[in-house]
Amino acid sequence: ALQRERASFTNYRNRSLRDQEAARTRGIEDVLTALLPVLDDIDRARQHGELTGPFAAISDKLDASLEKFGIERYGAVGDEFDPTVHEALMHQPDPEATATTVNLVIEPGYRIGDRVVRAARVSVVGPE
Image (cartoon, rainbow, N blue to C red):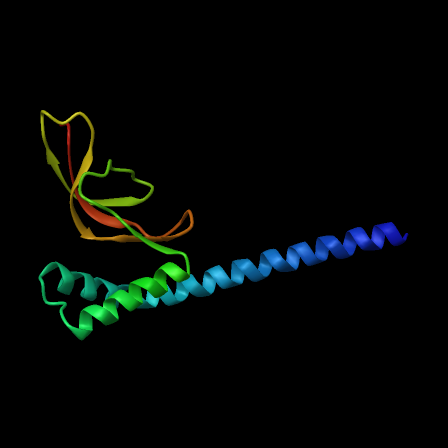
């Protein structure tokens, strides 16, 4: 009977730890989702060279904070198109292309571990 109680308690503890981690991840996702418009604005300012001085330092600190929580920004020109992590907003046919690849990142994607919070919004070029 004691062995059964120990096993039951161990299962309860493991289930509680899993539930805590899932709640933590959901909380991080919720904060990231709320910050997406701000992150997009910062990214656009960076692309246009408008992010300088103290604002660049703030942006770097924000990026470091995102990394600390396991948030990864992804999506780059030249990546092979993957519909599970990319959202193609435009497609340009290229008879010389052998695979569909990203030729413009409109908005980067964000993921926590292997879970996609927002797919990268991209333009792709590929075979007809």
